[in-house]
Length: 177
Image (cartoon, rainbow, N blue to C red; front, side, top):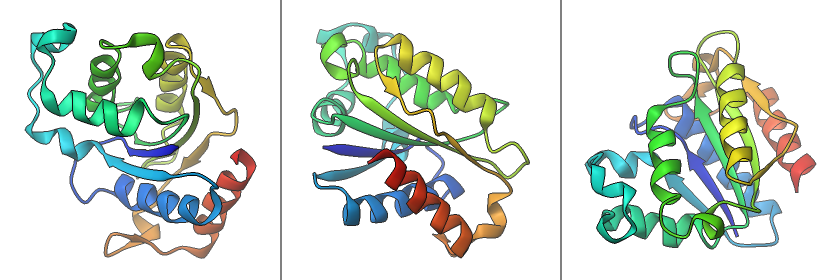
């Protein structure tokens, strides 16, 4: 199974437009089940100290881990640039799902990364930070990481419309699958 993660809890974001396009394309090309997870689902989940104990972890974290992360053998993470890195909600999520069944949740899985930014660097630095964390927890990160820059001009009404960018996404997926 492949899970695509829109790595922000900001609703109707540019990241979500890219993540949904990756999802649509992967559903066409992958020979396995493909699921979509938006971290906006965590908007109602409080960051609490109980997350660091398997027996006191919030039900929402358990449900997302059991449905989207544990059964997946591959993750596609589309991450915006927040303050020169990736969003804190993504780090929170990685930490939270690493508590219960640490080795079985992320270790040994493969990841494909894409960065999204309204600026010029396409979240290159954030993808570097994220790569280090994912490798630390035992994941294999695909070396072709795509930074999408100035993304506001590629999206209309929440959809990725630029033909060149859509081709880049398709090529990114094809090189990974």
